[in-house]
Amino acid sequence: MALTAAKTSGLAITGLGVAAAYALSSVWPVAGALTVAVVLGIVVGSTPLLTDEHRQAIARLTKRLLRAGVVLLGLQLALPTVVALGAGTLAAVVLTVTVTFLGTVGLGRLVRVPRGLALLVATGFSICGASAIAAMEGVVERDDEDVATAVALVTCYGSLALGVLPLLAHLLGLDATRTGSWAGISVHEVAQVVAAAGPAGAAAVAVAIVVKLSRVVLLAPVVAIVGATERGRRGGSAPLVPLFVLGFLAMVAVRSTGLVPAFALDVAKTASTLLLAGALFGLGCAVRLGPLLRGGGRALLLGLLSTLLVLATGFTTLTLFT
Image: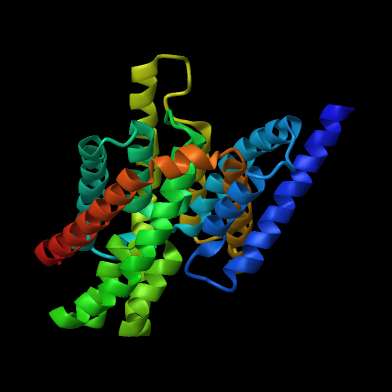
């Protein structure tokens, strides 16, 4: 009976956390519900309100929410739209994601942050921010504090990039298409991409969103490759490709048929955000602030270096291939 009560309470606490995250993110849209959710989770987890039973119930719920959210994320991607960008832009996207991911992992070793944190930062900065971090955290060996730190870095440096990129684009004399492409290929969160491309006009925003979504397509293969590598390092009998990654790919295929009605896509997008917000709230609840704050300096340096790397690589590859 006590376990059932804790489960119910854990579900209720997570639901309230998600509702609060949505309300607060409407005040600061650039942060997004996912970022606010993990911050609220850290706050709630740092209070004596949660018992060990509550934490265990929320942890179990978190895994289910995470996987369901990533699967539904696939319905945001239509391959024909991505292919329409052209071979040059797609080559620039693939190269930028690859260089940023591998480069950030290497920089993580250089500045001596934990391997799990470096992998999470590399995924979030090279692909799609908090959503990518949420997908990757299930296949790498990491601490809960690493997840919270990675999400915080995405928010901090993504916000910095959305201010710096329009200024640089203006100084470099870039047109709307090139500005939108640069924002889409190098800024972290979707909301941040829109804000970065906005000053260049509606055409820049439209291009930026499509280029950004082309990066999201790479989430599945990156998670699968890292998962296989981690499986080889640690041993064990985990699936070579996690089932939720296969589900993500299946939803991409469904969306690409063009048969899913617009209202269903809108519902799926909202549901995916709700599920991922619930998962990140749960991850935040497991965080202990002491270790998080103690590792902050090196993590901030890694975030800065990774942001500079993705901005420079994105600009260079677009210049070379488009």
